[in-house]
Amino acid sequence: MISKKLVTFGTLAATVLVLGACSSDNKASKDSSSDSKTETSMSSSVDAVSGASISDKPEVIEKALSKDGNWIVAATADLTFDKDVTVAGEFHDKGEKSGDIYRKLALYAQDSDKKVTAEYTVTVPQLIVETENFNIVNGTIKGDILVKANGFVLNGTKVEGKVTFEKEEYKTSATLDKEEATVTGEVTVK
Image (cartoon, rainbow, N blue to C red):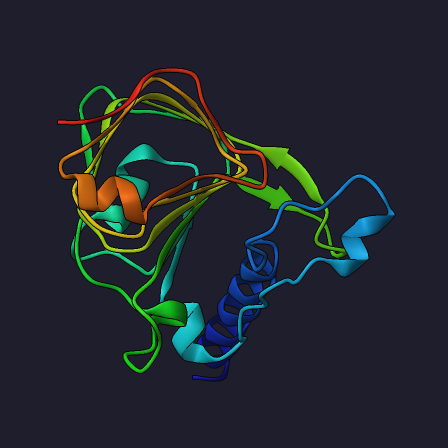
């Protein structure tokens, strides 16, 4: 019984440490102005821990992005998908129902000072975004993105492909250039 509690506590502690590496929505600046950046820290509460999915396996990340997934999804390596991946469902900041509608895909690692130490690439034929306020932070998406929801954000992300919005409303509500994010292909409305 004691060993089971120790294993559970150890797992929880490790998860909190890994989540700490994903706590910032902002790319760390390479100059002294990084001190002035606002950063959002994740709570170490059990709700925040249970509301995250962190993996280097495509099948785990795909499930985590589904309607049955988590509010925050973090890749820990480059990922390749042979088929389209759909981001679906309504999620709230930090996994709390009282929080704003929000969802994040983190494609980076950071050190204890929240400086980005690695960025990851997701290669996918098409990423279909059906979740409102979906934010992709850092890294690269190699493939096209189809947006079917309001509030889509690219935050320091490079898209090597096109971004298509299902409606003008979705395009108008999107932010595609936060923290120097770029899209190499066309940005259009269907």
